[in-house]
Amino acid sequence: MSRTPDSTTAATGTVTTPVVAPREDARLTGRYRSLAGAIACSQLVEYFDFYTIGFVVSMISEPWHLTFGEDAAILLATGVGTIFGSLLWGWLGDRFGRRPTLVASVVTFSLATGLSALTPTGWWWLLAVFRLIVGMGTGATNTCGPPMLLEYTPTRHRTVYAGIFSVALVPVGGVITSTVVGSAGDSLGFRGVLLLGLLPLLELIWLLKAVPESPRWLARQGRVAEAEANIERIFGPGTATTGTVSVPARAGRGRSHYLAMVRLARPFWSTVLLWVLIDTVFAGVGLWGPTLISQVQNVDTQSAANLFIIVTLAGFAGRLACPLVARRFGRRIAGAAAGVGGGVLLALSGLLHSYTLGGVSAFFLLMVVGYVFADGGFTNLVPFTGEVWPSELRVHGQGLGNAMGGLGKIIGPLALALFADSSNFVEPEATTRAILPVFVFFGVVILLCAVVFLTIAPETNRRSLESVSGLADTADTAGTADGAGGAGGAGGAGGGAAPGAAARQRPPREDMRPGR
Image (cartoon, rainbow, N blue to C red; front, side, top):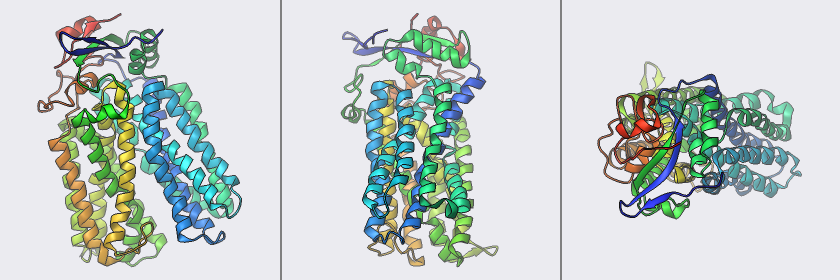
C-alpha cells in the first residue's frame, strides 16, 4: 500500500494521522516477551562489543609501541562514532523503518569488530578507523530498539516493560566482557578477542524472527493492514485497534528531520539536558571508579575491579527498581528522586571519602548506594526520550539523546582530569585530592536532572504516545493518567475499547475517529 500522507485541516489547525496500536486489554503473550527480550539482548551485545576495545588496547599498547596519543585515538574513535552514528541512525529509523535500521546496526558493529582482527601489527590508525565504524553501529541499538518496544507495548504496561527491557541489561554486557576476557584473554590474544565481536551476528536470528516492523511506523506509511497483522502476530487475533489521531499543527509536526525538533521546545531541551547530565556522571564514575576505589581502599587494581562489580550490580538493581517507581508515581517524580538521591549520596561520598563506616570506606558505601539512584535513572530516561516525541520524530529523538550522551561521556572524564590537575584527558592521574571536588561535581550534575524533570519534562506515565505528543510542547496538566488504566493504544482507547468507542474516552487533545 502506498504511503498516505498526514492530512492537515486548515479550519481547526490540526494534523490528522493514522494510528494502529495494540488494544489496552491485550495480554502480554510469549511472543511479546520474545520481542522485548530480543530488543533487550541487542542492547546487551552492543555493550559486550563496546567494552572489548579497552582490553584490546591494554594487550597491544606495549607490543605495538603505541604512544599515549595513539592509544587515545583508538579509544576515543568509538565514542566519536557513536555521536555521529546516533544522529544518522535516528534519521534512517524514521525514514526507512525501525526494524531494518536495528538489524543493519547489529551487522555494522559486529562485522567492523570482527574484521578489525585482521589489522596488521602496528597499524593503529586502521584499528581506529574500524572502531569509528563500530561506534557508528553501536549508536543505533539504543536509537532504534527502545522506540520499537514503546510502540508495541500497551500503555498500562509501557512504563515498566519499556524501562526494564530497554537498557536494564546493559551492565550485564560489561560483566560478560570482563568475565570472558579475564578468563580467556591471554589464550585468545587480541585478535581472538576482536573475533568475539562477531558473536552478536547470532542475535540477528532472534531479531529477524521475533521483531516485526513497528505498527505505528507502518500506519504512517499507509500500510494499515500490515500494521494490524503485525500486532495480531504478537498479541493474537482481534488485538489491533485502528483509527486516526488529530494533534495541533505546530511548526515541525509532520517533518522528519532534526531542524524540526528544535521547534518542539520541551522534548528538545529535556532530551538534550538530561542525556548530557546523566551520561557525564555515568562515564566519570564508570570509567574511573575502580581507580579511585583502589586508592581510597589501598588495594591492588584487580581487587578494586572486583569491588567495582558491587557498584555495577547496585546500578543494575536501580535499573530494575526505577520503572516500578515511575509506574506508581510518574516519570517526573521517579526522575527527580533518582536525581536527588544520586546527587546527595555521590556528593557525600566525596565529602566523607576519608571516613569509614563499620570498618568499610564511607566513600565506597556511599558510591554503591548513590549508584542505585544515579545509574538506575537510565531505565526511566531511555523510554521517556522516545515517549515525548511524535511518531515521525521518535527515532530522531532517541538518536539525539544518544548523541548528547556521547558528549556526556567526554565531559565526565574531562572533568576528572581537570579536577586532578592533569593534562592527560583520557587517563588522568586520579588522586585522593581530586575525589572531593569531582564527586561533589558529579553530585551537582545528577541533581540537575531532578531540576529538569520537575521544570521542563512532560509527564508520560499512563498516557498514550499520541496523547504525549500532543502535550509535550505545551503546558503540562500535572501528569494525570488518561483514564483509570492509562491511555489506550491508539489515540487513548482505554480498557480495550474498539476504535469506534475511542471518541467516548479520548484523552486531551486527541480526536479518535473510526478507522478500518
